[in-house]
Length: 236
Image (cartoon, rainbow, N blue to C red; front, side, top):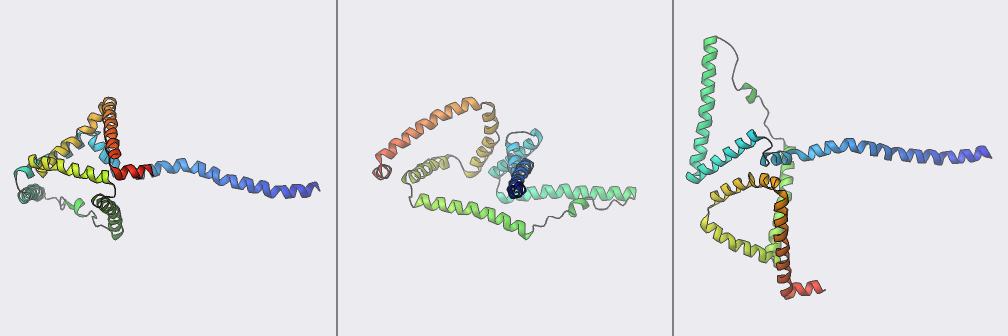
């Protein structure tokens, strides 16, 4: 009898121990998998974050200076002129370097080959899978934008539509003072200056932003209370 009872108990013990193994293995495997997922999800967003927060001063300075010069050139000249001058400048550099290396090879009687051979051999073709992935990611944002536009223009929420109307009315005054290129220049200056300033004075800025947010919220609640349709919907 004792042997039979031990035999009947052994399957339950073995099953419980086998059921505990996957959880233990899963618990041990998840910490090892999370850094890989985190590193994969970081990607370009981390690069942009490091760029606008001036983590690498030389890299950020190069990007900031190049884009600022480009925008200033577009403000002074037409797009066709700016693009033409950029292409001419790039061709002048590459052709001059190509001729210089050819002359050096002819004088030294060396056979180094084409100076840009390493770059010419780089495979820059875009696979169909990668193209579809980019298109699917873009379609997600396009669909969200379309839903938002329909919701605002068909007045699903009256307050949100009124916010858009007020914002567009303010933008008419902005458009009377600034053109598109000037706004892009100001936007670039803000992108490369506001994050680093906020990181340095985060506590003070959060304090004043909280005050403004509370006042704005109270004003919106007062406006919503005076609108009959929204007040009735909240009462229901």
